[in-house]
Length: 369
Ligand SMILES: [Zn+2]
Image 1 (spheres, rainbow, N blue to C red):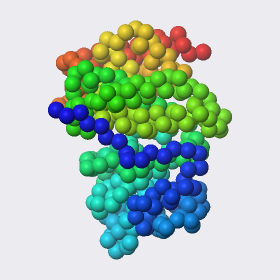
Image 2 (image 1 turned 135 degrees about the horizontal axis):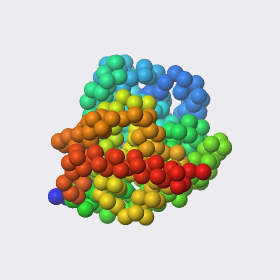
Image 3 (image 1 turned 120 degrees about the vertical axis):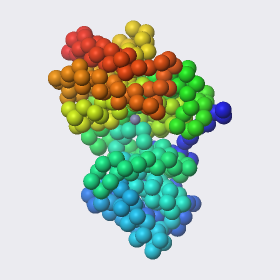
Image 4 (image 1 turned 90 degrees about the vertical axis):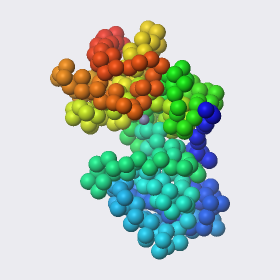
């Protein structure tokens, strides 16, 4: 089987970069469709408009209705592409806007540009869009034939987003090295449909090193309202490094355990990356990682405020039966936990969950001031 690496064609990151949006995309078409919420446009609309003043490219604004659904995607296609002249699709905002822009571009075969205003997951760079029903229930995955033509991170905007979102992004990115390592050992096929390249493994290592070196500095800077080099490095790790790596090296235990945790009603208010962080420490227990490594990751999570116990995830009185359900859901056929380099059963995952929670309590006592 071939080795395959997926990545966006172009990645742009910088403070205030949204003011140069048009110059980065004018080679892609003539009229950009800007998909953005009304409040988002009030915040950053002037910046976007100013970038098009000096450009050969024009823009039209579409206010997003709030849900990434087939209905919304079709509404946008009809109004702005089929019966309009837009030929570049630009999504500016959170994950649902990025997914809507990707879906519109996919159905109309137009180039797509994603400009996230938060750094809470590694989804922006991926060739994947998640559709929901109008009621917000999961509908389907769209596996796209290619990654976005461009992903642009305006770090000035992102550094003003809630700190907890960026920390959740660190949690999502924390899993990537360990999942890549597991996939590499087992020889699993990645989301890109091939084996892992050396490049993806190098990015996975760089991703973990960056998080451990810069995570705490970035969090403290963000809390102080500052955008520093550490913040820049964390935004890149959360989005580009983790994004390329999860598609091109693969997912394993941490994300499957995250999916298992979604059966607990008590955890629904937690962000994706927060649950993935607990999935990561559980994976480390499952694979009986070295004590030094386990201790390093717990210490890091505690320092930056990622959950390491079930109670911190909101599941204070979870029963044995509930935890068995979580383990079972993490192990259903086709789950990425089966990319681990050994046989995984729900019994093993249940025991790992119990231990990860107990270790979390132990290290909280040891490390929390
Ligand atoms: Zn994730």
